[in-house]
Image (cartoon, rainbow, N blue to C red; front, side, top):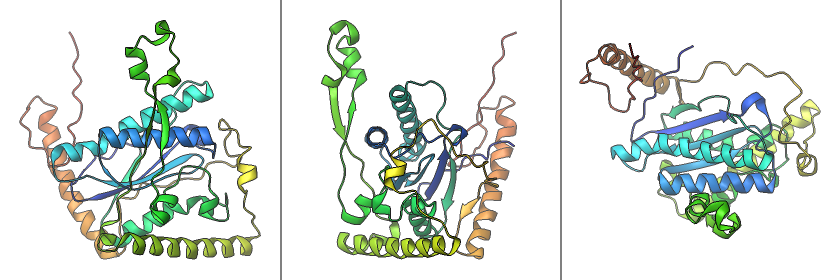
Length: 311
């Protein structure tokens, strides 16, 4: 199946999921891996600023919510550049740590727009409480992987360390006999409040967030008790091999949602606008691929690559 053309809008919020190759536990709650991920997110946000609403990593997939800083075309482009740099840094550094090679992510992220405030809020809580829903821990606070919980619940911005290998190479690298650790730096990433929470004070946002998370934890706990399931717990999770994978066969993820909406009407309205976007996009692509550089692509789209063959 062909990839869906990307449509990036300056005023939109995007919810994204990206899984690891073969569902391997590359993001297991390991302090080194957690630091690598946090530093990678911070470095990517530092170079390509975007609004981050949440950044949460389960054992084998990441979930993010983000939006452009403004309607400036450069800020909209940052939505893509941020992802490219962040995933590249994560894969490169975790591969170095695990002494492995090859791809870390199975495919491009599954991105869908949240078309209203309620659906965006629902996706935030789904991402943050995902380890509890999956039976990995009883409470989100017990999750040792990278999570948005601490910052959203308390306002604390964590700091992560990384080695600036560019500076190390510029200083001579191996020939200089300087240790890479001498070029260590610290970085953090900051989360933005949801648009619907912008009018609340920081204390009000944090209290509301903690209350909603607590209610979801109680709900998931009750569901586990009804089904006779137990949580894995931090001690068992600490023994996970990042190269391991689930023993159960993969479940069919189903088709990627077109959008996230809190009502049938909102979803239908988005579907109509998306259909109009696709009509404009494929019309422009038809001429672009036939050598017309002025083909009128709709705003927020990306031109398909041209394949040049030498005779």
